[in-house]
Amino acid sequence: MALTRDEVLHIAALARLGLSDDEVARLQGQLSAILDYFERLKSVDTEGLAPTSHSVPLVNVLREDEPHPSLSCEAVLGNAPRHEDGFIKVRKVLE
Amino acid sequence: MTTVATDYEVVIGLEVHAQLLTRSKMFCGCSAEYSAAPPNTHVCPVCLGMPGVLPVINRRAVELTIMTALALDCEIPEQSKFDRKNYHYPDLMKGYQVSQYDLPLSRDGWLTIETEEGERRVGVTRVHLEEDTARLTHVDGPDGSFSLVDVNRSGVPLMEIVSEPDMRSPEEARLYLVKLRQVLRYAGVSLANMEEGNFRCDANVSLRPRGSSSLGVKVEVKNMNSFRSVQRALEYEVERQTRLLDGGEAVVQETRGWVESEGKTVSQRSKEYAHDYRYFPEPDLPPMQVNRELVSRLRAALPELPDEKRRRFEEAYGLTRYEAELLVESRARADYHEAAVAASGLRGDARLQRAKQVANWMLGDMARLQNAQNVDIEAVRIQPEQLGQLVAMVEGGQITGRSAKAVFERMWREGRSPHEIVAEEGLAQISGVDELRGIVERVIAASDRAVADYRAGKTEAVQFLVGQVMKQTKGRANPGTVRDLLLEILQNG
Image 1 (cartoon, chains in turn blue, cyan):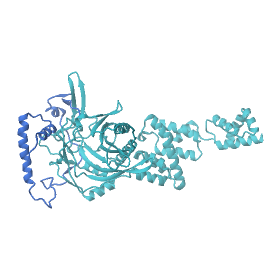
Image 2 (cartoon, rainbow over the protein chains, first blue to last red; image 1 turned 180 degrees about the horizontal axis):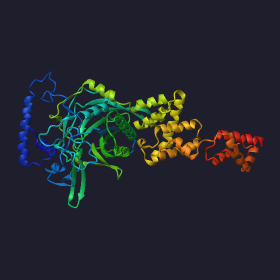
Image 3 (cartoon, rainbow over the protein chains, first blue to last red; image 1 turned 120 degrees about the vertical axis):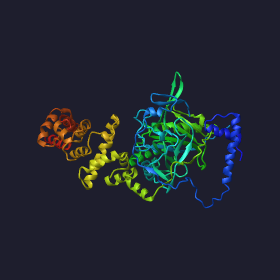
């Protein structure tokens, strides 16, 4: 199942990735190959089987509503390339 | 060219996000109390979206969501799960929001609103659970434009309540929001305060020719920060779409932001393409099986809700629907009324009489002072039993209605009992004939004109004389006794 160039560009835009023409061409092939695997999976007969959303047999793993200590502000900002007055500073993105 | 003005029907659906009253966040143990905390102090690897962390569902958040759903008469399916909603924005630490897609905690409920044409049910499509995002502050400085990120709000439990497109006017949308806020507060699941941002509303608005059953092109309106701005934004949008359609133009499906200062909605361009969220099951959170026993327990834990309480107030206290509706506006106000009535220990008609009088004070003088001074019922200094005592003193003839108003104002200011104030001010009603006779005689002696009018057949002159006696006694005289005395002296004299 071949993805079009526009579809690859759309997926890249959703992921906020800028791609060169070469990369678009390469990903067009690779993403199409992944979809082909799913086409093969679709050939399996799943008649009468409930959809599986999780592969482990666990349900209702819940915790009590009790607050625990958080990280220090210094630790939180430790990975931030830029910060100011305790805030993480990022380029302005308006939606 | 002739134009025919089309009669349009307005179609509105609302999406409300309400923060839940939990102590910790949705999937980690960080404190959910973010509003007063210094930035980035209630944050851990889970709500920061670090690789390899394991989120765990907050039990209380699930319970509060189910309680809300039950209060809105929703069905609670046995199977539910969380999903990832993928999009990239700086307020989203993980690149996806954990939300619910095809198996929400509840669906198919309703909320009753009271419109001018009577009661109407607004359908509730679903109530589901998700997590809040980080808070962004946009700054334009000399070194460029940037955003400051505070992750404290990231991961705070957020409940989404989606309505059916059942509202037919901006006013109905406002009524729905007011009622929903009331229900959330009654159920104790959320502070539901729009100005503080823990109750937010997005609206979908479209128009269609009246009589048509298909939906028109809808516009999503965001950025409304008060009930008033919701109503204004919707009114603006209805007008804008009407103008477009009347002019033969098409409404574009888009998201528009309400700009409060300019009183208009503007297109938010970057959303021109439909969002492609690529939902898929959250692999880190095992599904939930909501057992029926839990549902029964949560149903039992729900307090009496506004509609129920209103009906009971009408029946138990003989109040009008309007009075009852005002009294049950909040649980605290309703409780105040009930405490004031209960303190009397009265039964039967005397109790109804007392309930009516307490309601009159609460909805009259008390409401007036509350509004003027912006005081919530919780902060009113007059205790419920003190208001009951004041009513009892008027009913028992110990003070006049006029004095009662003055006593009430002092109770409001000082929070003291009416007995104390009446004793101190010497406001006790004068009903004694002997005590009043002297005053009445002096008034007659000083009011030649009124006395002459009375003798000339103008019986309304008596009212003037009663007024004079009330003035002399600073409102403490029993008006009935005064009138009898006046007539007696005038007829004999």
